[in-house]
Length: 218
Image (cartoon, rainbow, N blue to C red):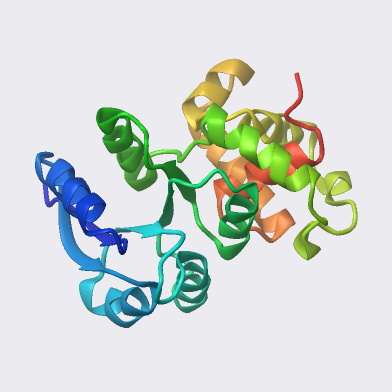
């Protein structure tokens, strides 16, 4: 089985080198390209053809949010996961709006970090409790994004609303299927419908929507 192709975009040499070394120890992952800025990432990504881009948010020569937005406009199917050491909630919300499908904190445990990379690649990118709390703070203190205007909830079925709730609480498709007593593929179909109805790009944006509307509350 070929290794998953990762591109690292970060202007901190030590972190970039350490992350490349960590990933290099895994039998199913490979770093196939690096960039030190958002501009360089945009220039090189199509030649490198990564399965996943790990993108730092703040870089001196072209920030990661700008690069993510441009890359997603050029290739909506490209998977981009943001890297950050910042506690600034505004960055999180902007990353979600730009189309990032994940958001990893740099001080995570190394093995947890690697497992989250695999979830980004193969499974259901989830919203960790730490990140979910940051989303709550971000969306509660900002204006509602234009794609969330109106009341799309009226278009959802009862089951889709249930799925929205559990996505907002950070559950995977498998966990949601077990909770609701339905097939995992059925959950995926509901999530696909939700994405289409909300005109959103990924699971993280759906989670942010659910939190914003209070659907993720217990």
